Length: 494
Image 1 (cartoon, rainbow, N blue to C red):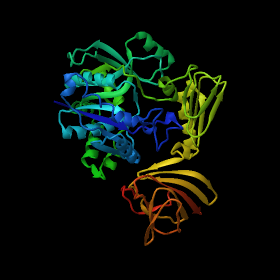
Image 2 (image 1 turned 60 degrees about the horizontal axis):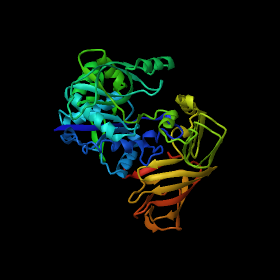
Image 3 (image 1 turned 180 degrees about the vertical axis):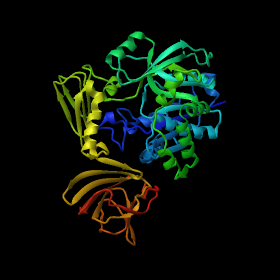
Image 4 (image 1 turned 120 degrees about the horizontal axis):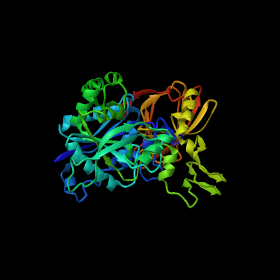
């Protein structure tokens, strides 16, 4: 039996999909026209592996995925996994981003400690795979190579001269790891190529032996640790220290902060794959992946994979389209009307609108840079902000007041807290609220309300079976989110 550990890297920022993707709610948590978010699709991506008729699939042990994510996103990961019935075997928390090589190294250390000769499959959490069965069959081919100590990557046949992807030059066909039950072709890796300019991308297309680098990798955990230890011993040493001092905290695997902070930042490609492809100490292979893959790395990529009307428009939400062609039009909160426009991206959210030519989709980073320079909150959060207990949404605000809609999930509760600068009025519009106010504790039902004076300890809980919705009216001299003093918290926040 071969143990295959799925490792899902969910720490990406997805800034090129602003304004839908934000720093505190990046693209892996978005649905993007699907019933499931990108993370949820990744969590269930290998569901069909055991049902394949190939006997190799039946000889696999497939533990629940390990998810590596930003500490700030841990409750989003937990909730989205719960919604699709997946309980990750570990949720590893990075105290800060250090790119993909340290993330994979930490996960591989955990996997090897559990099952020394296991194979790991590293999947980014923010990709689209439209044909999961084809993906699973390619994974079977990769397992055979990984068992023969290859470092395996998956390459996608290019459909256009794309400048937003890296490329991999394939060499001779490899028979290693092949058998009758996994007939996919595989090739030796000749070289990795950086994201090209337009002329170089066209050259790769014409050459016929270049594939897009999907960013999906597979190998034995032990083989990855051997490679990273040989090529970047500083990364391995820092990750060993960080994992050696890791702590379990409320079901999360918390990587030790100081040791991980000292770890150099590097990608899997730069740290290992590009170097081993040019050498002979480690063997590399590429498995062609024909499964409807996209990294949804820009708005133009979403247009590529979206369903389009007869005029080439991809439309999501409440949109009126007249005499317009080849546009991506997305509306979240109101009517969007487009007349006489071609080849545009128009994205509307409750607090921001983006308009740009489709061929400038990679340049959204300039907008992000402007917002960072001007300290704009729209870069970080949506109007609706998610918390481990539910969410809140700002409805209106002005001098010395703010109105919010607060949703508390069944069984959840906010921290026991107080504010130095504001008082609050709560009005229940749906469900039942249990309120702690100073020494009092009482229930409120629909259309009932209460007042929380400034400086009084309080807590809001939902003891019911349906979501609790309240309207909160804040008043005071300062209404910032940092005016919270927590005395007790079920989610181990400071």
